[in-house]
Amino acid sequence: MNLIIYCDESSKKGVYFGNFYGGALVKSADFDNINNTIEAKKDELNLLGEVKWQKVTSQYLNKYISLMDTFFEFIQEGKVKIRIMFTQNYIQAINLTKEQREKEFFILYYQFIKHAFGLKHCSQNGQHVNVRIYFDKLPDTNMKCEEFKEFIYRLQNTHFLDTNLRMKKEDITEVCSHEHPILQCMDIILGAMHFRLNNGHLEKPEGSRRRGKRTVAKEALYKHINRKIRGIYPNFNVGISTGLQGDIKNLWEHEYRHWCFRPNDFEVNPTKGKKRK
Image (cartoon, rainbow, N blue to C red; front, top):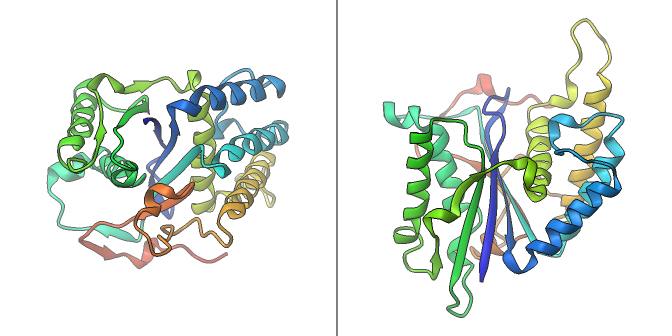
């Protein structure tokens, strides 16, 4: 079995939640069908450029909703697995070294790859699994990015040592999201979660009593995405880690999961807590 994982990260900063990471996993056998279907849908909707959360407007809302309907069909069928990870600001890591603080972005990304998809449980009946990982352009120096990718490569000799999972160095690489529609669709979901968890739907232009049209459109798209998720998991809570339903293998089996990451050593800062609105 051959797997492809697309990965991206959203804005680190947020009023209540930060460090957003997202991934979309597909089997190579399904890739062409999924990729071509999304491209065809984009052409049908006249979405000729790159689609992304930041481009959502009232004029494009219905087109983005239609595109998400197509993408979620593959998620519901289990042909695309989505994972979203984030941290909660009022849970603050303590006892970190200077190096850990400086490398926080990559350390969290490493944890995301290591655990979010439950790759330890992906091999069935001893079959070999080859994994390719495509990161959207990483926001750091070439040296730090290459060091990070080396750590990801070594996972097969540490965390995945007792599995049949294998990776090649050349298959852990950075890509341009403009050329990968699966990555673009995942970006929309990731952006929607960052938007809602940080109360972006409540923002108003300075001096205005009403929300802007773009904010209203983004909230409508988020609500549509949320309904799609709840079609898979009724009563899904976007702000907490998705339950295992009694089986650790669901880290792999589930079509869609959220992970609210908590460090082992932390303290609670009540001033960073989210107010109910």
